[in-house]
Image 1 (cartoon, helix red, strand yellow):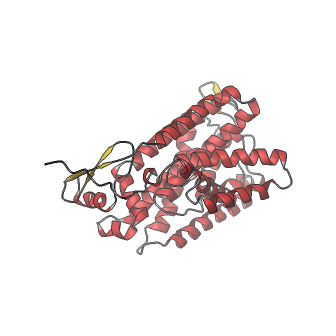
Image 2 (cartoon, rainbow, N blue to C red):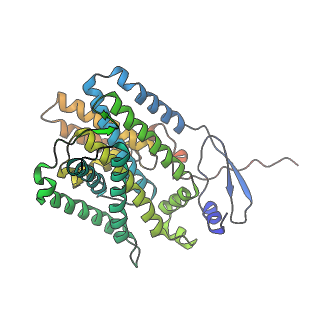
Length: 363
């Protein structure tokens, strides 16, 4: 283990889980921290079981709605990585989401390319490329970028993309690109319904597990230290801005994947997909559910979209006001999100509490 990583592990107490965690000091001597019971895997398991059973009990139109929610949950996952773990407030996450949607829509319209093994990697690559370019500009300058600079920079990028899409005839202007051909696998076409639902659910589970592995790795530990104390991480020899650029790019790739799925599920793309409204929407998902937990982003998306759907159906005139008040109450009284109702601070991914004292061995 590099000496610098050992120093990081010494500076940041071990993540508390349901098992004994070995913590390496800078001298290489292990120190064991006994953790309490894990709640996070239980929450993740319950959410997965509910998602698997949902199409069996939901009506057809609700299955279509649930598919859209899962795609948005994948989008929220990308933002939680960027903000919840690296502390980058990206108000332009929709730029990667929408640009990938437009990219695959153009592939389907102009080149008649709808094969799932072509369009989804293409959308992921588009999101990754845009995130790499924007992240390189905002994060890899000569001097470290401030949070405000990055926030306003991503916001500007999203707004500029929205205006470009609205004014570019090739992209359909205000109307966007309608009537996108269904995504296909050979002769089979993925249409709205259980098949598309389980496809996006499988993709979400795979991406979620990869993200969980990432944040539990040495790289994730460095990210946690970056969020808690960036100056100390830089003192240990890490290039903080490079770490931010890497996670920013990964987040852009996941957002691009979500945007590709969203375009084929909805059957059209429009300028709002790259704009400020969708960028703000994903921030609310993560705030409501709980940042820095991954599962909080998923839960927040499901609750916000579900409550919005129910309110708009029953209180058509005032539902945005009611939803806004609910979001405000949660943020005021549960700043760590709804996940904090069941998840302790020590188990929050990327948040590290004090080590427990070791029991001294009897002489």
